[in-house]
Image (tube, rainbow, N blue to C red; front, side, top):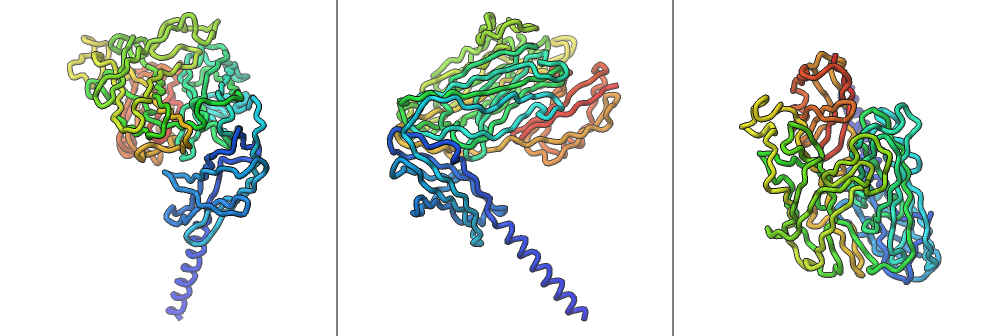
Length: 526
């Protein structure tokens, strides 16, 4: 009887596991292709259809197919997504059935009836509409939303973004301080690509415009947007973003975006004076025009930063190709008059700054790479080579109270660097990261616990699923960074005992960030 019972349990377990495994092999299938807009083109040429198809066990995906008007084609897998270059056979409506097939035989299908048209006219498309970002509100520093945009190839010659920033109906209205901010779009492989780098004004609302034609290939179909504003509880912001698609014949039918850099880097750290990673670029010989679009803003200031860097330091940085200097970037912006005509601000908006001004979109620097088409090369971004932060904790000769007021202040200079290679051609360009660069989807939101809180300045911090090198900073309610720490693992963070007894009593904020995501938590020091 016992043997029979054991065999029954084994059979029952195998049956349940088989059913569970079967359910795990049903594909999840999405596409940016939408029925909400027609596919616009002046002539019948190839259009990139992007598809995402996954199963819980990635090894069980067999193939993705497209049945177009009764004829079946195979999609091509490429670095985390699928694509198919479709040249419509005629103008008019076409039925497209996309099917993801798992190795188990399970299938998921979706159908799109797509109208292909050469009737094209300029149009304004709404994305963010009165989105409020308020610390600890519904959108606490981050906002995510999905929007549907026009689909086209060779139909529009430019896209302009119009950003309206208003004071929201929240406690405090507009934030009193200039906050670092950015708006991103999600690429087919899940990577977030920065569309706009922005610094909020001091306590007022303003309007802004930016040419985003370089990102035309990403601003199509059903896509996700996200917004980040580094606000800490002294008011918030209300955002509206509209896109003007301007009808016309572009110089080249196709364009593409390749992310080169997207990270924060210490400036003048004696342990690593040139921290930006070298990038190996590979530009196809079929590319007709190519350039580097570089956005860089400097942050950090005060008597514990040598020469008041990086925000107020007049710097020259350099682009090197194969160890040869090819471009000089003078990163210091004139802020009075405000470049976006954002007037009546509070605070010190009128001082010139490193790559930005309060209440303005940060302008990118452009460097032509067209002559490098058909080759691969090492691309380097080199910081101001003679600068060193002598108040940095890594300076062994720094003496608190002597060479600097506080060598462990933590508010050392940093640059936020974002670089993209923009390629253009009359040959189809498919989105992808050259040479298989790893894509990290940095949208993790870490849940931070502090114990005890309130505290006398001594406490511990706990979070889950922390990966990689992590930067943890402590800020005043005005946003001034007062301490910074670095951890290489979750265990290292958990075992660290924080001591902030040297800070005044009051409210502070903890900000945790790494390549995978961010987290924020309010703490109270008695």
